[in-house]
Length: 111
Image (cartoon, rainbow, N blue to C red; front, side, top):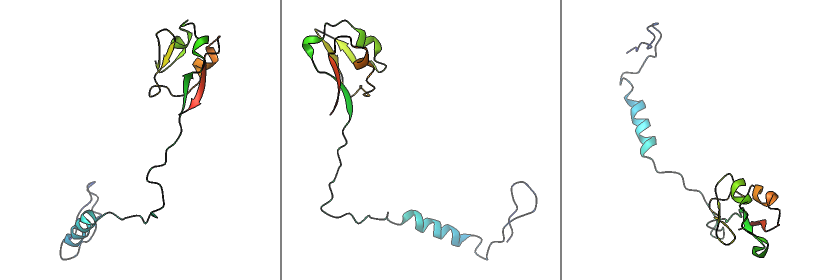
């Protein structure tokens, strides 16, 4: 059996007497086959924790709640209460607030 290309050029592939059934069986076997399993030693840690750098209020006594850090933060991770409050999940550790704080209240730290 011969199949034509979609562009109508007449080129095509010759299929065997089963008409491509072997291809379908092989594809089905590949899809149904179990996923390969990696051989990981039992002594290996399950999850490797990776440190993140975030901004922190290092010296809360130096913070006068001026709001410069709030205006500077591109992720809106800083709010003002009595002092600056930084939300670590929102902070990307860029350090812009640390550079703009004139009072030295903020610092970068790994968490």
